[in-house]
Image (cartoon, rainbow, N blue to C red; front, side):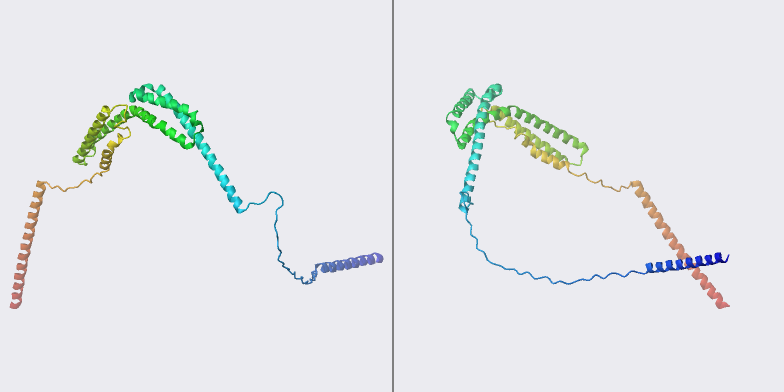
Length: 322
């Protein structure tokens, strides 16, 4: 038993010593570690020295290929500009040649396809001249005109188109002129109806202004009739006197006037105070009655004042007697 007790005591002492050692180790671990200080060395850099030296450079070119000089550059630009000009002239010449050739075929086709209308505005001599001119121009195109320049081609087109365009214009006016006249007459009828309508819908517009519009319309009608008569008397193979483009302009002044009148504002209604005779008589009677009442009240006041004064006198006398 004594041995057991001794062994237990030794174990306890050993455990206590181990605990103490463990605690000491923990304390040592918990202590902050010292930071290592890095040592730095300062090194001075060597300064660089710059040495400058002027060099002389000589240029030379080997072979046939050499750079352009100012003179050579100008010569090259002039050559390129001349080539570009010739290209433009060539293109313009081709366009002018095609234009002349196509117009020749247009004259021939028009004289055949639209023979009826062309016959109405031309004479036999004019049609024959156009046909001959087109045939001669076609022969010229494949003869002298084959090597013709731009200016010559442009002159040839003017020579062909000037008489032909006059004929085509007269053909166009055959249908355009009656249509323009019909359209103008419709517009004039609308303006007349509008003036009649304004008598009720816009009665604040003076009748004189509406009549002025109608008067101008009559002037337009007279002018149109004169021009139509002059055109009828003119030979169809000559230049027309009345053009379809001029007909609508005859109504410009009237349209301006109508537009101006349509913007006339409606006047504001004026409120008038009207009194009946009976009401005036009643007001007059009421005024007389009021005047009589005021006069009566003033008289009563005066009488009342006299009574009071007499009463005061009597009272004074009574006091004296007392």
